[in-house]
Image (tube, rainbow, N blue to C red; front, side, top):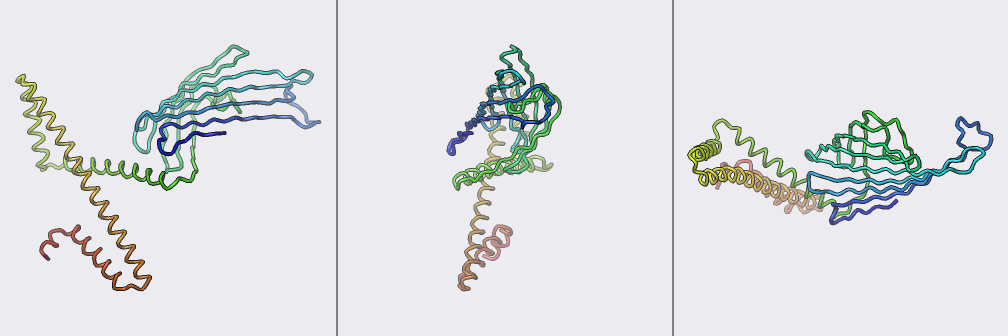
Amino acid sequence: GAAYRPISVDRLNVIAKYTYKQNQPPTGQTAVTPIDQYRTHVFSVDAMYDINERWQLAEKFAYRVNEEKIQGFDFNKTHTWLMIHRLNFNVDRNWQVGGEYRRLTQQEAKDSLQGFLLEATRKINDFAKLGVGYNFTAFNDDLTNLSYTAQGPFLRVTGSAYDRSPEQRKRARARWLEDRINHWAWKMVYNELKKPDSQVVKELNDLYAMAKSASNQNRYEESKQLYTDVVMAGQMMFEEASEFIRHQIAFEEKMFEMTQQADEAFKEGALVKAKQLWETVIEQSQKVTNPEQSKEKK
């Protein structure tokens, strides 16, 4: 097998595999089928491309050369092709839904089977996913062990195990943190908008009413500008919430770093330095949790 998985630009991933299987039963074994021996060559290529953060395109092509030997005859060779087109949609950071179109072609018989597969996948953690779906075709996607009884519901567990480089871990954490910041920011906006006595909601409702009134009076340019103001106000709320969260994260990371420095100083016997660092952490934390009380002290 071989894989193309770039580190810096990981939108495209390609995995290629060659499999050789041979079955030669021992002498004296009682055969239940007339097939005496068989050997199989399977070539497969899987390619996955992230169109954007939501959509992913996956393609699979596989080719099997199967040789079977019936008692008293030479090997008989058959050729089978498998083609799969899959489109995935990321609902959020944990859920993904996907659909496949499959086509299996047997060259010698000049026969082909085709159909669809649907699947919903839930991310368990960074290294495991659980999927449930329904296969509307009668065949599976593994030409090394091709089965024509695969139609129906299925459960799939996908795992990955690899040692990420420091750069990969840093980028993964940055992506995770950005996703969480956006989630928390919109949550703050939502909590503000659902308050019954929110002044922001009152102002937005007034703007919306003015825009609707202008539209009813055919003042379309004015109406368009007012609607734009409503959207921009919501965007500004989101950006302010994001900035507030980033500031809080930076503050907590700074306090954590100072706490670690204090612990190290205490272990090394630098008690005065440790005491000063701990006092600074406590003082800065009190300013954040009780800003009015801090002003009174000053």
